[in-house]
Length: 551
Figure 1: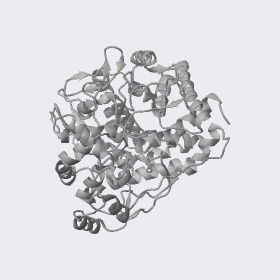
Figure 2 (figure 1 turned 180 degrees about the horizontal axis):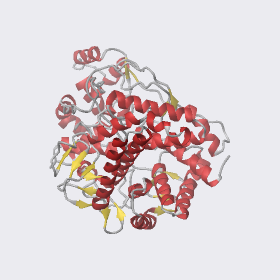
Figure 3 (figure 1 turned 180 degrees about the vertical axis):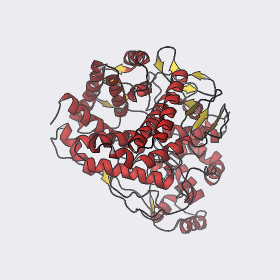
Figure 4 (figure 1 turned 90 degrees about the horizontal axis):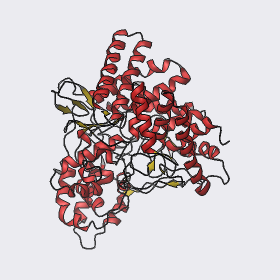
């Protein structure tokens, strides 16, 4: 087991977009940016498991970090936070302070002298591969082993090998991994499935939760809690032993998502927990920090400036919480359903998150039953039943579909999205409502090339016209669970057609697709379209198996 190295607190997930016209930011807000970097909100005391957490680059480098990101030394804000320092951070910071005001000082030259930039892994597959052969060839190319990491690197070492999504995503991501595992299992790579499960259990034991990704700047939040589903996936191969093997980390993860619930008054919230006025407890996305994400620093500063009537920390917290959702960004989280600066993620009780929490409760109850801890079985069975009742009461839209609930405004949101199928995916929905949801989803979201993420075109990547592999799989499984085999097949075959068309034209798989039938990679968001791509590979292999396509 790795030796936990201590220090203090961190943060986040995604992106890349180069904002035009940012010189005004450099002039007008340098002091504010530095203050935000150096004065991060303190971490919640109950997040960790004893040891202090490693510092993220914004905290290690202070004003140097602000200068580099503000000056856009690298086009992608994620590049600098992934660099490896060539000296101790204190030495680098001292050198910067001594040199920065010297005539002729070059910030780019200074960064080149003191940091090693992460190299881009160029993947060149053999020509003429079938889609299936290409994916199986990619698994070793996307596998990383980092049992150690350079001192003061943002990379968090993990004891066993893991698969990365690809492109700029050079680390393992929490919820991506479930869909990657689907493909690994189809490829007979149960060894990697087990390795990644063990890595996640290791992180729960070390940090108290599974971070967004294995980077220090992701530590202040998690991602959609798919660990329970990963355990269930492993159990399909090794039987009930998987439930008892991972029961302790499952319970620790649950404690993380529910921290503060017992002491929170009705109508109030604490971390990931919201207690509604009637005492109902549901979950929201959250981040323990309220500063710009280091990996998307300049973008977050610009977004806060576009909301002058709101405290910047409030905007930054909501941006970070959206990153925890994995849907960064989407009209689901916007006050006006259109504009990023109106983001209000922490005011929303998401239907997908609460369905996954039901699954976690149900899986813990199953694990406790296998372990013959029947008091625990009853306890978590009751938690799951209460959550199912709450979802039906608060997360149901009268138009006939599951939706998010704005707990501050006290009303269900109108946005219909592919997240509506999550209660069906975890089999918590009554049949009548499940059928209504599937009808609404089919009518509003099903396109020639698969399921659209939402009905709205906002130029955000988690909106129309983009379709994402994980959401196709969720909706497909949801349809099958409720007797809609033809709809499930239609969703699967249409999305597989999108993947096949782009692969035929460009010999690659990508993270998202425009589902208009053109076989085009998706757009929008904070960074260019990425190749690879872990979860697309995993879902595609399962679809190829299901429909007997490709050798």
